[in-house]
Length: 142
Image 1 (cartoon, one colour):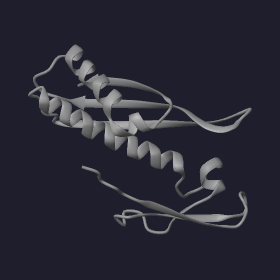
Image 2 (cartoon, helix red, strand yellow; image 1 turned 90 degrees about the vertical axis):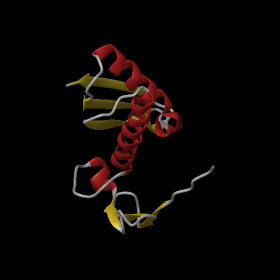
Image 3 (cartoon, rainbow, N blue to C red; image 1 turned 180 degrees about the vertical axis):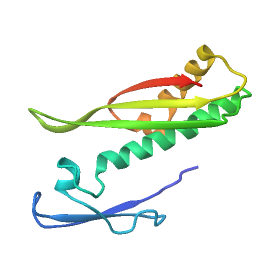
């Protein structure tokens, strides 16, 4: 089984004075603005790093839901934040790390089992496998 999803970007102008927009196949984002200032200066708009973060958080949380189900558990609530690090080095910009923070309420499990299952989800989530970065996880069971 192969599922293909797409997103697209449109850009006009130079790096700093240019403007772009991002659109997703689903329509969740349609001509959503992005540019140098939203990526590097904190101006309103999106940027590739926050989109990667949202995708990674969503993928990881769904993977953990599957893994919990396989263990006979069901989450009452899980909230994941992914912080994507963009750094400039001698070879240019790179994304060397992603840090996942998970807060979850999962009845019927203990801390050790929960952490083991969360680590398994981190290692096996398709987005984690895609990223060539140091992916860390801070998970806590409420």
